[in-house]
Image (cartoon, rainbow, N blue to C red):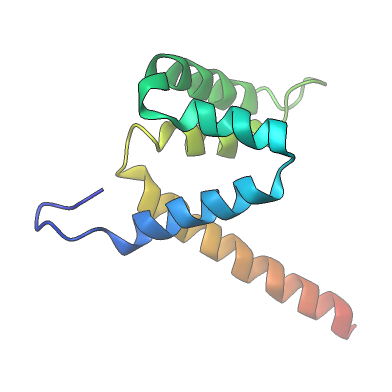
Length: 109
């Protein structure tokens, strides 16, 4: 998404690239379903699905629900609220950095 100056936001583009890489790792049927859901014309399905996933993430104490639903819902919602993409990319980078540090610490024990 271009910012008011007309240049693309590099963090938003990095988020889109990250999602594309993750979709490539999924089984074909799942990746195709998510790609279908991410299409601009599917907004009427995507927004309610994102809201339900976010709400389900808050019900993580129940057996079927879990915290995995919260980031998935936020990622879906970011398709319609592009201002979320830079924040999600920064969060993903922070989590990757922390994970790398924990793994390095664990292996160095």
